[in-house]
Length: 167
Image 1 (cartoon, helix red, strand yellow):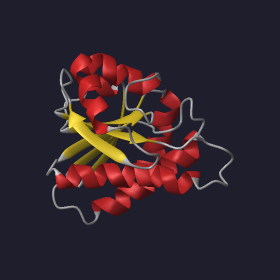
Image 2 (image 1 turned 90 degrees about the vertical axis):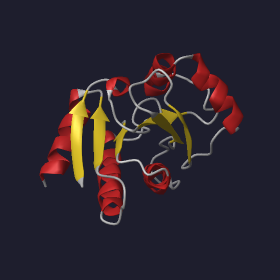
Image 3 (image 1 turned 60 degrees about the vertical axis):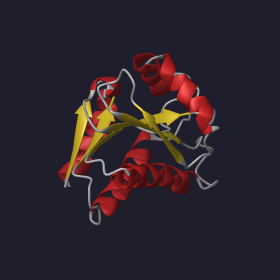
Image 4 (image 1 turned 45 degrees about the horizontal axis):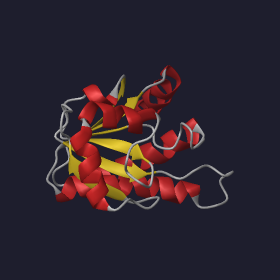
């Protein structure tokens, strides 16, 4: 079992699956979602249409198409509304459901972006702590997963994960 942080473009990672911080339509958007859709190519949108969308806190599985990653796990993070509307539990569910899908499909490597910290305004420090705790707890009982990478686009997020991993 290994957890790591990496700074860069998640669409460049050669892992079994990358996680997409998607919107509920699964049809692409801004930020990491748009980058993944552009890099994967038009076949991804077609497959996502067949998935019928996704609820906040849930996750769906697709092929990776033109990505180095074989698969994409799409999850819809919560919009931050001050923390009193169950946002933390929903964010933890995004990580947990994604890990469960990876495990169900016997995947050994997965990479997560910083879910909900962009336009959904989830505070980066709180989000990183939830991500780290949820993934660490899950990894104690996994059969297939061997490596989880927290892929950070910004230097600030990368530093947050570096600190958490050093504890």
